[in-house]
Length: 298
Image 1 (cartoon, rainbow, N blue to C red):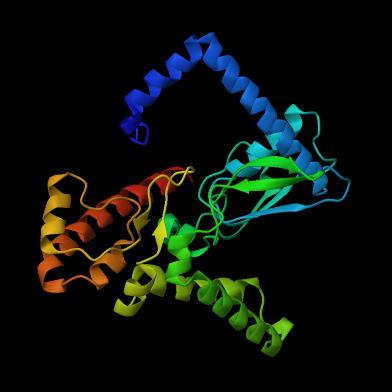
Image 2 (image 1 turned 120 degrees about the vertical axis):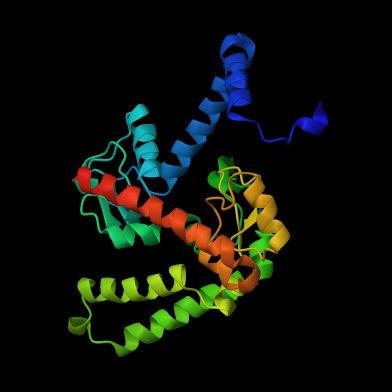
């Protein structure tokens, strides 16, 4: 029924739907035809933007595995349009790596080829990082040719929630700080090791020990985990004792997308202390397990 069209499917329901698509020739043919038209438009856009020229270029992304770069390479190779040089990917962090040449992926803060366990712990808050670099518009869903040029078609022209939060003021503050820093620092006094040391200090303070004000401001950022942006959630909602009890009864009191330190920082500490203790114990066990896996894995 139409009222159920927006309902999120379970994994079992998705498998059933996939089998329907695979078994119904008419449906699968329609899907393949649509995919072909989308692919042709995407290739047209890439060619228009110079991605198929002989000039080398890089792909910049936040993280976390290099899967988007691999998808781009697979798409170009599938059309026999692979550029002369391997596309270089530059990332903030790589927690894992997809099947690509190791030299084609470069990470600044954390790289699983040279693991630093404390930095990996910071990168566990990946949804927080994703929200902090959100755009003021929706994601690209396809490309279309209009007036002789290919243009990206966005899911939404404006990301109302993040605009209301104040994303433009936030982005301008970053640019202003960066400009002041570049104008006042001597190049030979600021290298990558120094930059990483500063990043360690600031990220550990912000991600693991946010102030109440930081928690209230950045905790109100809304973000979506899925590619279709079907569901938005607050990074650190204010939770009451009743909320904690309800979440606990569900068996998963702390969903992976929550910025937990910020949740506790702005909640009533006397009411949530037992939950904070339980969470700390749970995290300690989880981190010990990760540490063992990391050590055994080399």
